[in-house]
Image 1: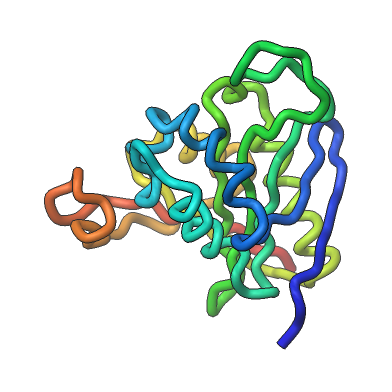
Image 2: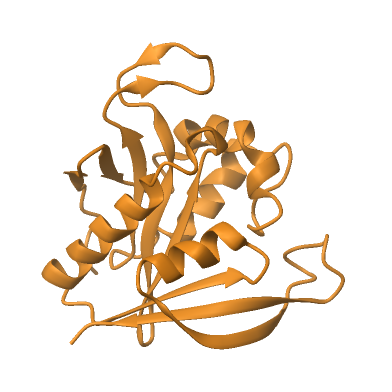
Length: 191
């Protein structure tokens, strides 16, 4: 089995550092807790009072297998939303690709203080370019709840096409939903 490989990249405004579930839960937990109100409606693992251990379990999804590439997103330099201090490289979220049978699924979230500025678009484009050029990926999907308008808008902005809707039974993962949620599935292929 291939070993975990540390990777670090820079885009125009971001530093992307590969995440690993056994190494970065403690670093990401305060960022998640600080923005939980905007994550909780959309992400099954996001809940008030999430612990470092639970954060590490979430990170396992984007880092457990060597062919999965989750990245911590840092700004190159900015005021930190957590405490309004000017800091170099505040941690602002996660973006990654998760190996699926027929390609890769994109996964992302951003701290609420940094939304609406194009950071996730920049990160997704960068990671897709990396995946196409280095890993020779030909197919990406984005799966999002239909009411998550920013995520639906991002998929369309990036040239993903809707392949329809599905209903997922999520009562065990998202107790706030009675039985199921409707998700939109978006696809982008490269030749």
